[in-house]
Image 1 (cartoon, helix red, strand yellow):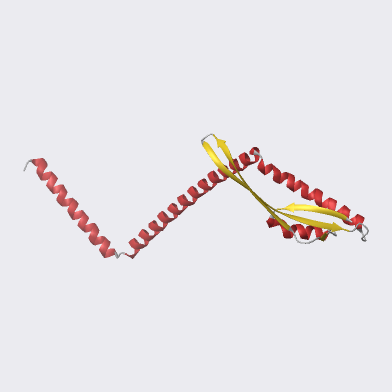
Image 2 (cartoon, rainbow, N blue to C red; image 1 turned 135 degrees about the vertical axis):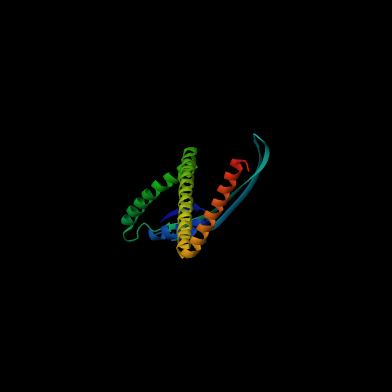
Length: 175
């Protein structure tokens, strides 16, 4: 018999159990929740802070019989799976590096700028559309106006212009 003790976050208990059982491991007992809380003072550039750290993990115990059928194949598949999984864990560990967060921040800033430019274009296009719609509406309104109304308005404007011209001519002559 071989035995493994695995410690995982509470959110990964079920998936961890499923993973190990897929490779012939048997769950031994109930998973044990381990919760620790500690506090300490920490000096930072802007003052002293009381920092509380918590550890919330679950310890799971598995056993597997080495004399079970296809044990060698199960071990081979488990190793392949673990290697594959390790690649992603290694990638995920880069998340904690400053370079990673710098890249993430840079990408977010780029995405924000792209979003802003896109929104400006959308707003501009919406304004153009509204102006075209207003122009269409005015053109439709002009078409709906009767020719007699337009003629009347034109005649009125012409008579006002004529009166204004006469007034200006009168003043120019000194009357």
